[in-house]
Length: 355
Image (tube, rainbow, N blue to C red; front, side):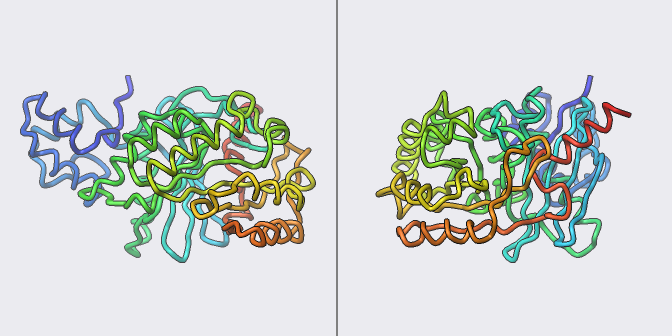
């Protein structure tokens, strides 16, 4: 039986576990520093922790439940990792370089059941959720990769936008967030973390109630129900009206701005009239909403969709700005590798199936 990742425990949970197993609760901080400050690759490297504590931990937990299966590096510095889980499943994690720091995009599920018609992640249906330890270990895999360069670089930002719907794995997501935000560990501040959801309204409300202060991004991609249902089947169960009510609850509860993500698909949702309709939908929420326009990375299996040309992107952006809607165009990363989320995993699995 595979041992769970020790990265799945918050500092408080680790202290409680040690106490329940006859150890002093205070030793949790020594272990924590070994994990996140010393970044030990095995329990034996934690020189400040008593041998009997290390022996106990090694009997119950693992530091290495993920292994790098494939790695792609882009000319712009983006690195895409295909990681193999202990059960043999494959997931993706991406390191992106920005002017403001180093960002890691993590996966929360093996596959995805949301079924957006343009997305590579949904080509392979969800087989299971990741544990909070498997999510956190993705960060540590990237950090250890950075450590090997010897340049002292640190992961500074996290985006939860990889394969899967994060809010469909809510408990493990929240545990992961509390772990990486802990000031005694990685100490990644909540304003440096963004969680993206396809629009699970009930979970948006629950997330608001937790008041974790992390950034929220909602994948909208269409300004009306007819179009959104065509490209995102989740809209059948949670129409735009219900979603916007949940967003209103979030805005009122947290007093934080949100991002509406909008992938531009050529002659599908990128026309001026759709930009105006989107502005009308946002309405009085303008001061609290930013629209992030996302260039589409074409996927072979979704050949009905193509990337909007630059002229259409700029026209859509201009139409929103003239309606006093805050918006931005996402800077692309890794365009010379398998850039679309889930694309590398899907291609690799197909190769294995035909080997």
